[in-house]
Image 1 (tube, helix red, strand yellow):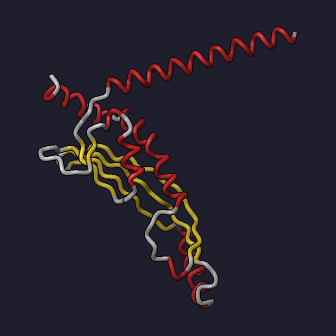
Image 2 (cartoon, one colour; image 1 turned 45 degrees about the vertical axis):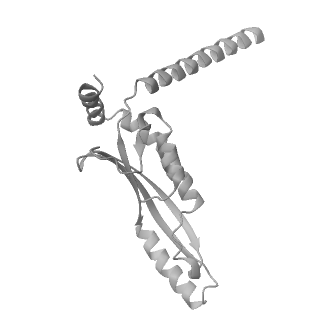
Amino acid sequence: MKKIIAVLLLLHSSIAFADEVNDEAKSAKNEEEQVKLPIRYFSTVQEDELFTKIKSSKRFDNLSKEDLPGAPIALLVTLSSNNTAGGSAASLGSAIWAGSTLGLLPMVTNKDMVVRYEMMVNRKKIVDISFTENFTEAKNLYNAHNQTLDKDVLEWVLSTVPLFKKQLSQNSEFKNLEQEYVYYFES
């Protein structure tokens, strides 16, 4: 009985490994077939890691922060925060406590962070993909004006890049744009 179970586990693991190898081969094949559109990059996230991570796939080889004369395609990445209902009340109470203790107690905020990826052609939006995550932060009253991204927020923003690329590759309008580009410029 133990031998049968061991053989079944071995067969299952080899099948799973074969599926994993096939998935990697398919993704490599898809990576090679991707069209390299000239895309201008604009972002409210001033971190170079985000640009580098987006540019890491072949589809975004021609992504540029510099102005590309005549290139009508642009990728706009924005990061914004939205107050939650409970977060607004907690922030107000926390700010009052922090102010009354002259900054000894931290201000606690609870916000929904939204990262939005917008692909535009001639200023017309063709793709709009957004991701939302809730974050709670404790900040000192005296350095609450610091506008740098927290490590957790930056890690989350970077983790949305593969999801963005996957959803973009499945978007019909973006596929049509790639086909049109190939038709006019690569034939």
